[in-house]
Image (cartoon, rainbow, N blue to C red; front, side, top):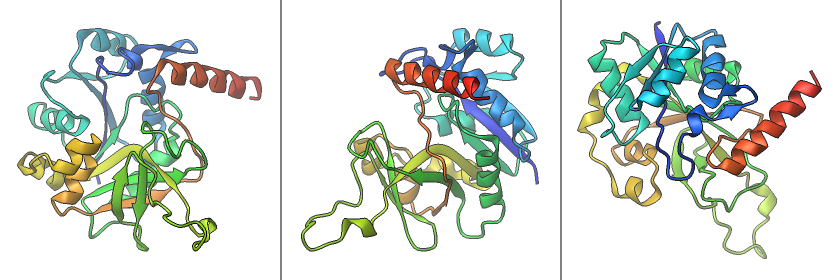
Amino acid sequence: MNILGVIPARYHSKRFEGKVIADLCGKPVVQWVWENVRAARSIQRVVICTDDRRVARVVSGFGAEVLMTPASLSSGTERIVYAVKKYKLRADIVVNIQADEPFLKPSDIDILAKLLKNEKKASVATLKTPLESDRTSVNVVKVVTDKKGYALYFSRLPIPYIRDTMEFDARKIRYYQHVGIYAYTRNFLKNFKKLASSALEQAEKLEQLRFLENGYSIKVAEIAESFKGIDTPEDLKQARRLMQKERNHA
């Protein structure tokens, strides 16, 4: 089975413009992501899609394959759908890796690819990790799943909400952070343009809600380690400290 890794990399970001090419311990953020995807055993080819020449220059500089996509596209999935058709990318499964997740492990990518490869019901797969802090942060997306591991809902608010802590033991509930990486079947990507943007998606600014509202199942696998993407300049500072700490203990 042919599995393609695609990294959508926008320059413009409301919270942190240019974050994907910001310096992180001697390399652009997106380069750390690209190197991790290349190290995943399941991925045969890796491309970076961008709408900005500044990103393209940086990406080409460290040897990655870069594909230009229109600035009018509003999401990473739209960028991938465009690239697959425009550049005739061949793949049975496409893995969408966010360009601001430098701590995502190659083994996590392999878990996701295998999850969809063996899946019969879902056309989309993603990951979650236990959430012990930042439950109230709107920058941390939460997910709840059913007993078989299929997503019920994603939200920027803490879910589930415990209405009465006097009557319910909160220790029975585990909170999970959604990890922003997806795997799609080729057929799902072919049909993606037919899916109208949904009210829930627009309210939460989470495109995966469009999938759920249109009846698509999303299979979710749990990974043990928690890590944070880079959404703000402060996140970048924390990432630098964490990476330096890991180097000192290596």
